[in-house]
Length: 399
Ligand code: AMP
View 1 (cartoon, rainbow, N blue to C red):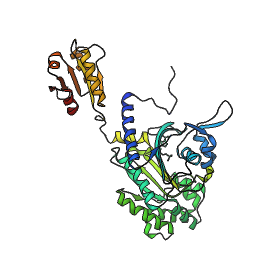
View 2 (cartoon, rainbow, N blue to C red):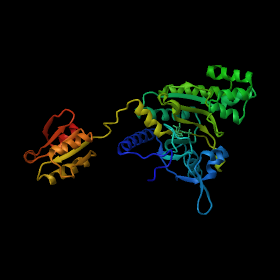
View 3 (cartoon, rainbow, N blue to C red):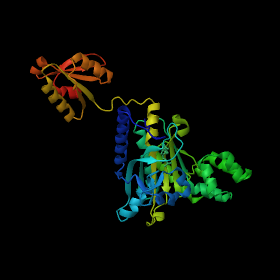
View 4 (cartoon, rainbow, N blue to C red):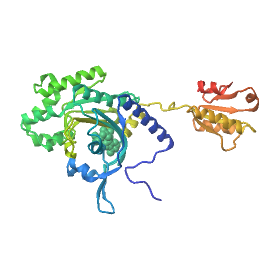
């Protein structure tokens, strides 16, 4: 027997139902903010991913050579591919451009709950504006995607790399390794590297998280952005310790967590970044975020989200001699977008009801000769056991 590769998953019909439901929900929210969907290839030139994050990412990237010796990689994320696409195709378009995407990503991570080697990201990129209201709208988009998916407990933290870097410069403690340690929250190591006094100042700085006490001009812009977050109705806290590892991030950065998920609680990460020039494009403000789709689903499940009423669902059973009529009924219900399963096993009514019960289908329609003559069918509610004779139109209203 051959099993699936480590860190990958198969999805059952029940899981796929939930995934597709969440997918379409998230899509709607992106579109409600005026984002348009784009798609890029599953694999790209490896250079695209090393370019912006250094060679370090190769460790966790699925890189390979094709038969012609090209160095390729399964995409570990979608920002770089989308920006590549932008530079190739959309530089001349009217701004702002608002693109969203949904796709699988691959990382050679250590698998655990909420962390996989193949996982899905929903995300977006906003190109052409770094005005405070644009950044506030971006954060609001991320929050709404999670909130309107039904998630109740979401923690939004907003930071600012210009402010953080400026502070670190001020205490003479800024380098790439320090940024990495801050991102990974490896405080012991950080103290060793910064020195005790600087570390103390840094800890005071991130503990206060007080924008009003900061005099750099970056703080003024940040204050304006977060003031708009109130207008957008996004609950947030300031967290100046967000470092987001990679060098190409600038300015505002943000993360959203589902506290219940424990170690792998981060659902979303994003901010302003500067990668277009690295790809040979003209400098332009860009920002975006990525949401972990699988983790959002896990978070919903942990909150006990009720997925049962995603779509109306009916089972059609029929008495002897009524098959053609049953097909007509099923056809009509399907035409209305109702998920309709018809008996195709030649079961008796009793066995059909058993089956519907087992599959958790709440509504059963029974096509029977006497009722049919009166233009009616029998609608049985499997939860209450009640049944009544109704027209097809009434079925649609009642379920
Ligand atoms: P990143 O591109 O690293 O900022 O990731 C964005 C989001 O994708 C994270 O906040 C996670 O929710 C999700 N994510 C990242 N890596 C994984 C993984 N290995 N498995 C599942 N979700 C992930």
